[in-house]
Image (cartoon, rainbow, N blue to C red; front, side, top):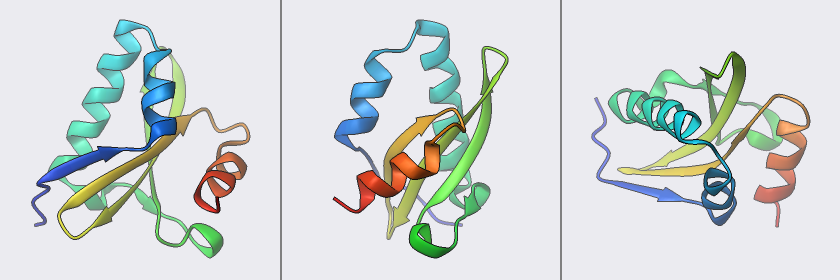
Length: 96
């Protein structure tokens, strides 16, 4: 099992998190804790996003996708949001 020593938020992730309500932040933090316990819990993507994993969780009765990557013992949190345009925006962000 991989032990995560460091968690790094992308600027986009931090900006999005600031806009959330307290109960949404709690749901997001629970999802991040699940990922740190088992980093391979998310679905590995293919194609342009082949290095990224996406973890799906519920927040306020809606499905939220969380994109992250694990490099050595560091967890990089890229972005999260609803499914609508999620992968397009993620590709755009990673290819900058």
